[in-house]
Image (cartoon, rainbow, N blue to C red; front, side):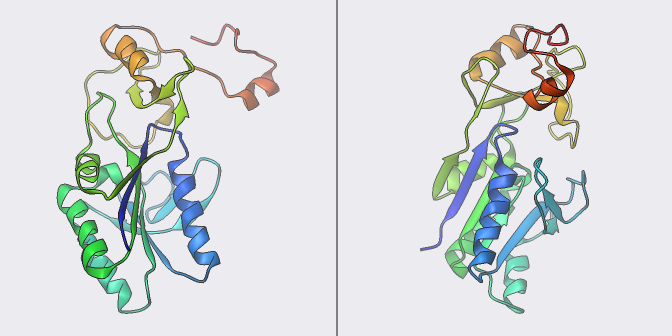
Length: 218
């Protein structure tokens, strides 16, 4: 039975990698996945989904006015579609989430959405709000805060590591300005004025010879 799945997490938990792995699994079995990605995410190239570890795949770009049900049905005129995969699903509109439920309920095609749950203010994105309300299954992809707790929120920071509390909800690129944190750390940083702790990746530390107690950690 086809279902609508919402796979959510904070940033850098491997959502895009998981999506591309799912697409690969379908193709490996001779099946055809249909991939959607928002056109506003043009960090690499419009119509391309790319993970931080280098995996990538072509996809159908969509805008806020796109009808995902009709786009899926149009694909069925040319070939079978065994699964629909949606990257950056937090950018979906309410209507588009409804359209995806129609893909499941009327076309019998499973839909797997991958995205953030909340924005840098701790508030739900529109797409995430209605996916949480209407999805058949919710799956959390887990990652870790620098405190060692589970990271389930995202904070946007300035160059000094202090939380930005105002600004547009959507800001493409600039991943270094976003930090995945636990709820407790989010409150400390966003409301308490605490300076975030930037952690240098282990691979880079190995090259530079600096460790976790280095002076370049804030």
